Amino acid sequence: MASGKFITFEGIDGAGKSTHIAFVTEQLRARGLTVVATREPGGTELGERLRELLLHQKMHLETEALLMFAARREHLAQVIEPALARGDWVISDRFTDASFAYQGGGRKLPLDKLDALERWVHPHLQPDLTLLFDVPLEVARARLDAERTPDKFEQEKADFFAATRAEYLRRAAEFPARFRIIDSTRPIPEIRDELRGIVAAL
Image 1: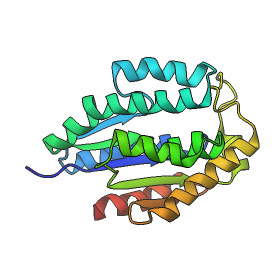
Image 2: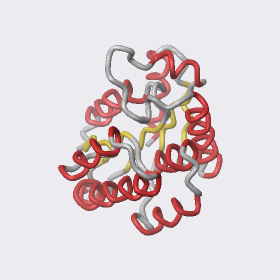
Image 3: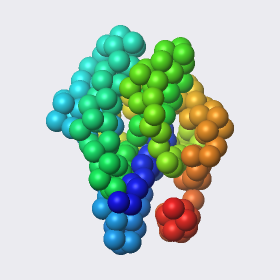
Image 4: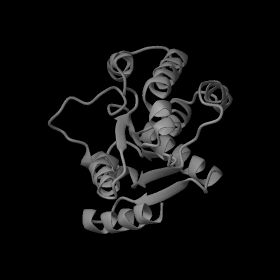
């Protein structure tokens, strides 16, 4: 059986990653691959319930991190690991890098606590490829949809997102073999040309 691959999309709110998830999924399916598209927090019935709490309920920082990883453990057990075992490809809108960026960088949870949770929840699994959509903070903030009610993360101040972006970039520097940084300030057709090349090389 052909081996499945695990691709994650990351970036601060407003970076534009969600615009390109469906495009990459379609590119892979056009090659005859079975693709499971999912998201975090969420991806399972329990995960979606936890998502509502995590995005809208105020809570202690450590509670937030623990619930993120609880949702992730269920996501891995119910969706990601079975799909990869079948030889399917998995595309996830966020994964553990988001916990380092948001709870670690933005919220200042000590990174060693996140390291411990990562080693516990998925010690032998990392994405094969992480696409980090990166934009300057002012561009990301301008892109957020003013017509909808922002969740508790989107309501954070500029310094939170600056720290979140910095942690994403630190992670990318730490794991250069699996990260590709996408300059998301460019026009969508130009970004999609780059994504086509990345997909073709997989």
